[in-house]
Length: 129
Image 1 (tube, rainbow, N blue to C red):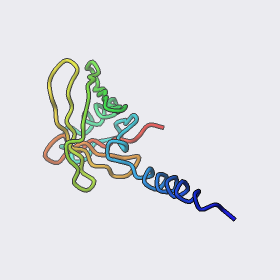
Image 2 (cartoon, one colour; image 1 turned 135 degrees about the horizontal axis):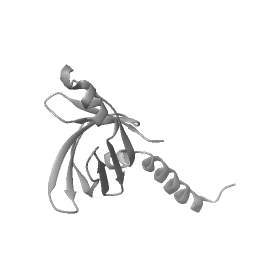
Image 3 (cartoon, one colour; image 1 turned 30 degrees about the horizontal axis):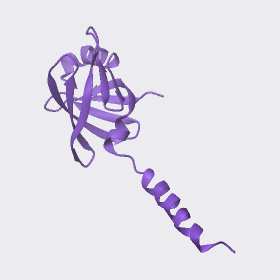
Image 4 (spheres, helix red, strand yellow; image 1 turned 180 degrees about the vertical axis):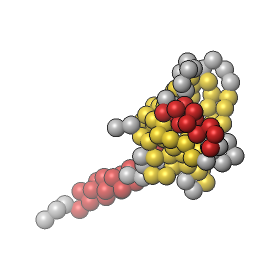
């Protein structure tokens, strides 16, 4: 027979395990994301845009972020999730050298997200293994 005083401890562990499984939007961003392609770019710019995207990477580590864009020095800084509306995340970036940027991302699933870079164009990013 199990002693009654052990149940609260078991219940605490069970609740911690259940609540610990839910990932916050910030948790879902963590890791390195690599450019896969672009959607809704003008037809005449598609080849150039896809080349640019393939060299793009965004790495989230805690509250730090590093954005790598082809032909530019990688930019680092901190970020915060400014708002969440369904699968749409608005992020605020604070650059180490100064400056503030805002960007909109959509989490398609745990391994794919889309970065809105214009009125309709989106960069598709996949999580690196």
